[in-house]
Image (tube, rainbow over all chains, first blue to last red; front, top):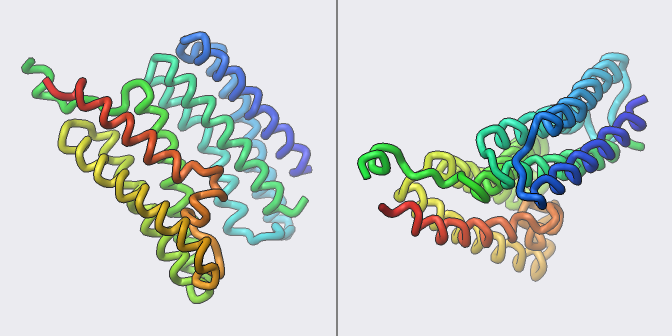
Length: 119
Length: 139
């Protein structure tokens, strides 16, 4: 249940990164549609956080330790919203680059989450 | 002119915002990692974990100075970035020369290869940005 979601979230994060990278390439700030995209990716991370906590509550153990697993879940949850807020403060192409970087960071976190949970 | 004096000059406009993002990520990464490792298995690799903690503190300070802005903060950030770069190069070389000193990796091991070389690229781009910002910061 968790691993397919990790894959979907990681791919969505990369798509978001490419989309915002494209906006930056065209010298545009993030717009409403980008924020909807960020909301979708953030929602996936929230669902992932919830399912992860439920799995833990059911007594399943992540391969590399519960603390690390929860820390990465929280990091993945906070990643894109934080980048989105920063792009609100920076209304230029650099705001778009920041969100693109946020998407890449989230994708890396998802790969780590997959390892930590034990694929 | 008075407006420029009242408010510290922004260091986080344009590319500065991207730098703050990456520094923020590194703060969370280095601090949480070292906090976890020091509290659970400090005896395994005390040097490595202590160095990760130092890296986290340096990243935190640079992030703060970038967000705060102004000429003093710009200079402080520049010094810290130089120290950070020196740290990455020193620890990176150290881990290559004497692997036995590091049973576990640090944030700065192998020039930050575990973090896709962000630790070594970040101070270089930050110093470039801060030097460029000097012209706009000064009235």
